[in-house]
Image 1 (cartoon, one colour):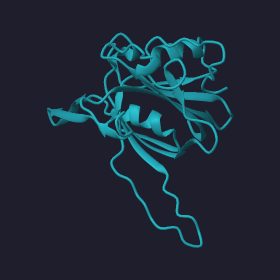
Image 2: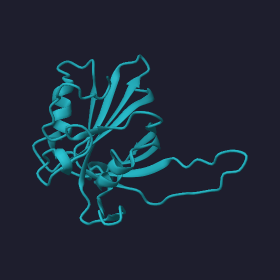
Image 3: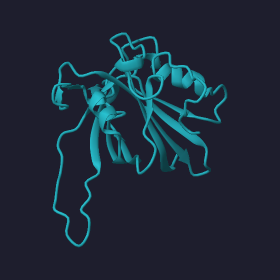
Image 4: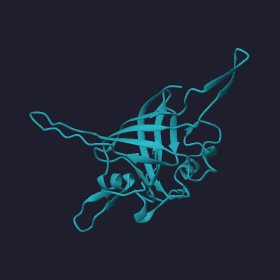
Length: 207
């Protein structure tokens, strides 16, 4: 199945039990941050590591069995721009109120993420990760001249097993198609983002 475009990326912070963090402990509105707005949004989201080739075991001169290891999804993300404060919280940086700076703190926070894109027939599709870490390995800066030199935000998301092992069948990744029987966006959001529920005025992914 082939797809096109990227509609949006949404993040949330969850606790060690997979429950969504809200208020000052969380991000965005009511605990989720949809990366959108003036000059903000995702340009690419490349998912790898969903499955690895199995290890074949032989007996009697024949291939008899294949053992399959756990999935290790990783997502390479690029944003045209993303809110500075929200990004620092997603990376696990803490704010120094004395001078306004941000520094890394370990352990890193549990980050849930939902990717939204479309099939070639414009059916909404989603890839969800209920637990993981978001890292920014470096930054790039170059001089402006007669043309502006831009450096988009590049991040890596490392998916982990859901903190709540009752969801996703214990796997780090789940995919949805909006035309599937039983698809329910509200239930999908609640599963990915640890009990999230919409409130009036909250912009939902895909709206």
